[in-house]
Length: 284
Image 1: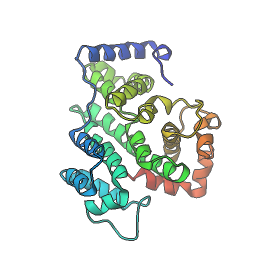
Image 2: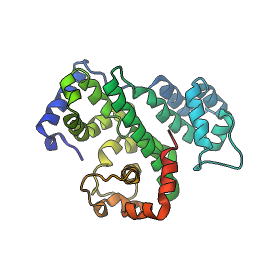
Image 3: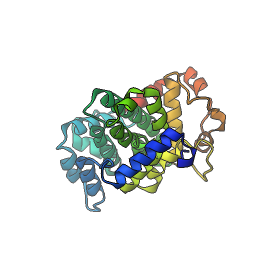
């Protein structure tokens, strides 16, 4: 887990510069998209119903199409295909639809005016959405936690990269030095991500995810959303023939709490990768 003291000197310098810029209102932390705010406000209304929520989401054609696609996915598919938003909401339920809509509405934040930053942001969104799909599958079949909240955790676990790239846009030399920028992102995005989600008033169990999901040996009484994101991230990497550095997966405590085998490569070899591939496409 990243702390200011454990960072490299360059990461400490950039982190301090970003925090100073935020304090001086020279760098604005990302704000939730308007659609996400509307959906969350509606979800907080005890009198909200499917018709009201459908009316809000229905103003965004792209978001509507994504919600319908999720409702027809293998994880939620019923006896008939969903053709419209009202049917999708009835299948998914208000809580699931609200969380998914909030998360998916954030995709618009992962865009930039320069090609170099835009590509990086789109890559981050792709990874986040794939992780969210994996989170949904793991949560639904391995825990009593809420799959919609797990998906939201997956979609937002890298949100701290946004202000780093926003900052880097003002320093072309840093943008051109991809290895240094990658190292800085790896060391400080979790701290910024936790700060952003806290300012957005997300539940504590989601705010903790950016920091906790990379604390591979942390102790916890029971499985939580950080565990789900940890395993989903590692499984997504393995599905694309990658590993998280030299990490010994047998030391990752999240696997034990979720009751899963840490030998991911073996599971993939036995055909579980088909389910993984489907889950990773869930929110794309």
